[in-house]
Image 1 (spheres, rainbow, N blue to C red):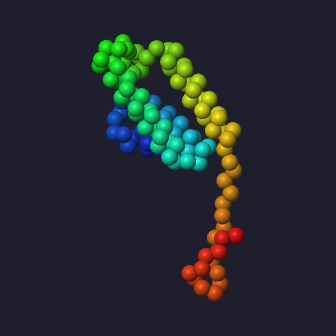
Image 2 (cartoon, rainbow, N blue to C red; image 1 turned 180 degrees about the vertical axis):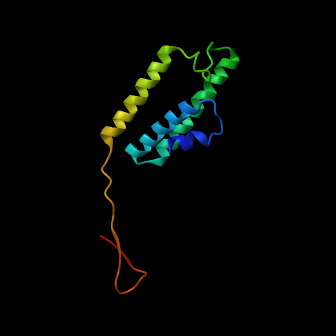
Image 3 (cartoon, rainbow, N blue to C red; image 1 turned 90 degrees about the horizontal axis):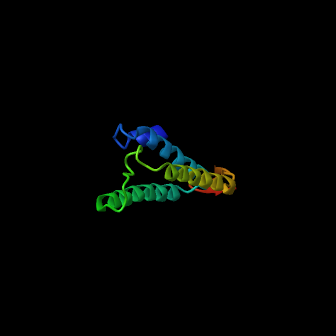
Length: 115
């Protein structure tokens, strides 16, 4: 699914980092059980990129966040540690999925009983 996530963005450049982001967002959904949390994190990721591009255009920073070769190593390592830490935190807070069985009543087809 992460490969599809990256492919739907329609750009070959940055394909591998988007596959990694797709994996992280998928794991976030898997461990948290909330699709909204994954959507929020995707929004935050895009917001950070736009914000740093804005700062670069104004001359407030010297590196371009969109170029992976110019990002300071401390920022990259900090991002990796934060990502792994958040995934571990969600992993420890996960709840076991318990499926609910749905049976139809013998008398009518319209009544559904959840046990």
